Amino acid sequence: MSDSEPIVFHPARGAVSQNNGTRATGKKRASPIAFDRHELGQILKVYGRKVAAGEWRDYAIDMHKEKAIFSVFRRSSEVPIYRIEKDPKLARRQGAYSVIAQTGLILKRGHDLRNVLRVLERKLELVQA
Image 1 (tube, rainbow, N blue to C red):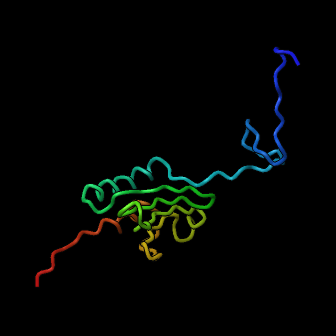
Image 2: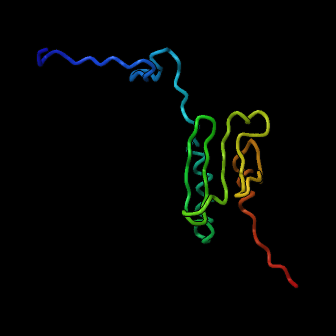
Image 3: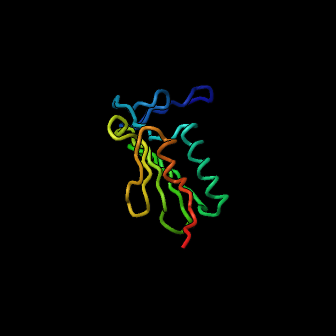
């Protein structure tokens, strides 16, 4: 082999090709579900207000094959107090977006993210005794 001869690598069986994202077997690779720029902007507006109020301190974003999850933490060492999920499989039925509490209770589900996030914007009222 000379210095001018290029080295040719052949993909392993089942490996992902570099040029078009398909596997050597011809199957398409499933890309993870993610929040787009506008969705993330809406979520981060609510998150920023809650951080400024001292209620929330940390977050995590998970992207899976079936859904994307934005988790909100009071402290980073705890379990998330809220999870904002995007599940496209539910888009035609109940809505792709949902807010889930720490206990697993679905607080709100719908087609419009802005309306779903309103459940987190509850204002506390002073009760007169």
